[in-house]
Image (cartoon, rainbow, N blue to C red; front, side, top):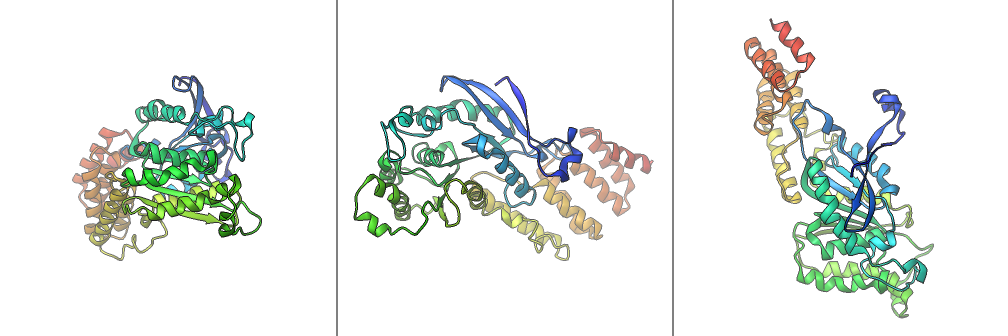
Length: 408
């Protein structure tokens, strides 16, 4: 992956003034020669804006792997960046994979033809395992060696991509932590994957995995599945595939396997991805959105700082338990609370938050700069100068140097 291109996305004019040439840069495009696939493949990468903020200690991000990347990269990136800033989702790295041959890459088995595929379209089918090898052996290791990734991966796919998501969950369970399957093409190969699902769910462990499946409305009027069951045909198998998979999941007694299926009566097959991605990520980050900026009670400085900090610690423990790795409380959130108490002249509460950040982020410029402001507000100029000076050993930052100069 040596060839580097900038992906430009012209978006909300509000942000243009801060960008070079008024362009909004949402990611980078790379190319790699895949040995597993025997061809050159491209992929797009979006990194959260916060990753470039040197005032804070470097953090690790969960990674979303997005199929049909050329179709969904811009929309998903805008959503995740916005919801991350509002603390509804965790901030994420997004890796989007454009298609070369989606019928080949997303199908787990070869078929000669099918209900929605003629013999010409079906000819390249059955390359799903090779595409999985590309992800597992080439793309994921490359991403995790180049970027600051948390040990948490998500896979999102639509239609045949949704079929690939379900197949990966069932047969390569440990490759990802969470799966979003958008209106999956479960009809493929006479619903073979649906028929296999029951035994696989019984025989394998899916502890701490999350699955979100969306169902679009593919009919102009309601369909009576009871009536359809009476008439055995490839069409009836296709219509019944999703209800059968739903029943199979309901019969599974693994309480540690988290799943949700949601229907969208107002969305067709092609309009369902965006809202499905949003709801799917809401489900995956279901324990995270207590941190939302709309949760005014949590960040109310009329409450004692210790009570707020205790609530945050317990909330992050719940997040860590659901995500399967330790998610450290956000340096920014803790810092903002410390300053909120500092502005309210509640020094004891401010102290708790600044101290907590130092314990978790001992190499952060911001931590020591904040301590300097704390001691400045406390009237201890000697301690303030000490911490401002320590901050400058981490990052040469002009505003902090000005504060030291004023103390001299």
